[in-house]
Length: 111
Image (tube, rainbow, N blue to C red; front, side, top):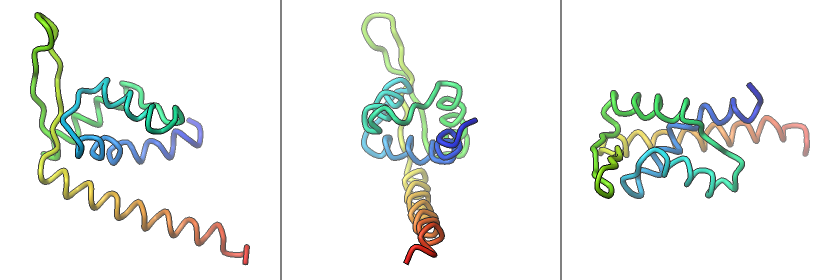
């Protein structure tokens, strides 16, 4: 596992919840949005995406529903629940706090 993967692993929940705060989405759509918005730097493989979605659903942060697309194709869409919105706010707050702490440590002797 490389350094980027380590940072990404801890951020997947937050990124998925952030996208779902905008709209109900299906899995592939979320992976493409992350690639696009992250300039291709971050890619979430299905092996990380779906277990994370299932975990968030088990905790009640998101829900899912099936939608018919065309005549035969069905997609599973994910929806952010109120508890998920609260959890997202907590994750973002903690992310910023940890990020600021890391910056302070890295810059400690730079002044």
